[in-house]
Image (cartoon, rainbow, N blue to C red; front, top):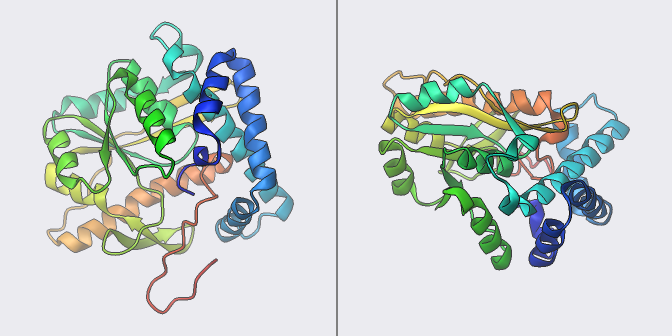
Length: 298
């Protein structure tokens, strides 16, 4: 699944939700997401299969509950994105709050750039936007959406407060940003193919995983800070959470270091997906690429 928003008429929905008060926009976004859940059979099948791979002891009923809650999160995030133009430093605290901000500050002060190690979990678009609104714009590594109108709309909204996009193929742009002391957000939880990806463990199964974070961190000495935007159902808002910067493995063997650091980064993502299973993107075929000779999982 490239992006759950590609399954809706972008301009109509964005303007409709953006015109509604936030509580109504959230309710409408969740209703729309539930309709997609009901009618998009393939997404349900992929989600149920992924949950069976990751949590073999989980009952079918619990898997369905996790998926439905995940789609509610998609709808909530869609509504918040539609309201991005309304966010201000004065009102954004109603939407999201920081947790562990000192970990980002400490990494940023090094002056060697910061890589946000993150995933399609919770409100990933919201976290980067709120961070820019608070005066910390970042570069976001992206793959263009299939829907050109939606791609332009999302890019426009992302960039309202200084965030800019870097195509996933632009390694030079990533290196330049980090060497300039900037922050780059990289979502590294989707299926890849060699040589862009290496096979590391994810929920007990090998998953072909982007090695870019490990490569650019080694070249630039940028700090790798796990950063996740988590929906808190008690607070009824998002928590933009930063962990302390990770210690890179440096053995002098480049290939080994890339593999071991990518495995360590992936374990962080697995930890958060286990902790918040209702918030990770189960509807993407994460284990699609298999090692040579190994049977497919889908």
